[in-house]
Figure 1 (cartoon, protein in one colour):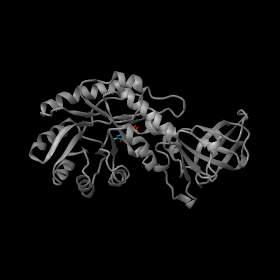
Figure 2: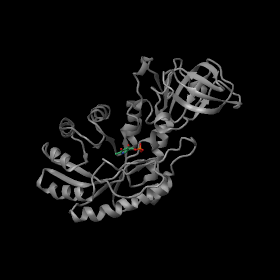
Figure 3: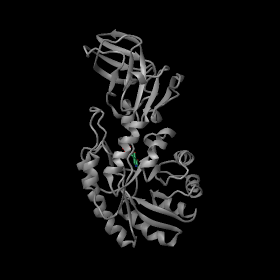
Figure 4: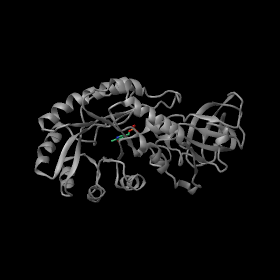
Length: 358
Ligand SMILES: Cc1ncc(COP(=O)(O)O)c(C=O)c1O
């Protein structure tokens, strides 16, 4: 991050909207005919949504809250509504707001959705494919096994609903070769399933989960290889979140205190993981730069926040230049699953400021 872009009030989130715009444009180009949806759960900040929107075919939302927010922010962008445990109120909202696709999670949900009139649906598939190397396998309660999928597909013709295809977000944190292998297996199962149920022009949503390597901030998911290797000749859709927005946000703050206790040096920073929970949830050291220093790392320290919990750690025993109160630290890769997944109200510290680079 450029030191000239450090805001006056810290802590602050700084979002690079211009960089985000260029990144998503390049992802869009790499994907060719494959449709691109953005998973709003990664970062639903309105300015992020408005930057993403011109490049995508739609937005994936996973709650009534996200649905209302995204519809208000982007009144004309197609929406897909997924997520487990949809309530009747949320299904009614989807009907009222004219959601383009509902990703149905269970036979019970299908029946409740049908009560709200015509709607296009994708059935969410929980397929028994192994995904070695995945950071998260999205099995368990998500979607349906083959038996329930078949039961839903057979039930749909007796309802006002239209079966358009399947949705399978099976893993996150896979690189391009592993994602391509998974895409082939999903498509290999989905096409005959949808043909058996008489679906014309079937849509196959193969989810998001493209890898983001927090230990290597310069590395990117290989979108070019992925776009080139995806199966062609069908209506294929992806819905990434993290790999689109992670790189274009920073959480910037300053050092309040530096101390050595029982041989370990701690830099206590303004703010904490109630603003940037990503390193705690992912179990990594958040990559960072000390913007106020030109010195090379010469020692080690643990970077912590102001919370009264030993879990309030951004980075543990990492190489640092000499640190002193007032030094400015910018945590990179804070544009996805960062502010919006954090427990903001714990200890009632002030909220961060938000800055947008255009
Ligand atoms: C259904 C669904 N689609 C898309 C995503 C986005 O995944 P990612 O941000 O890893 O690309 C998620 C994340 O949990 C998801 O649950």
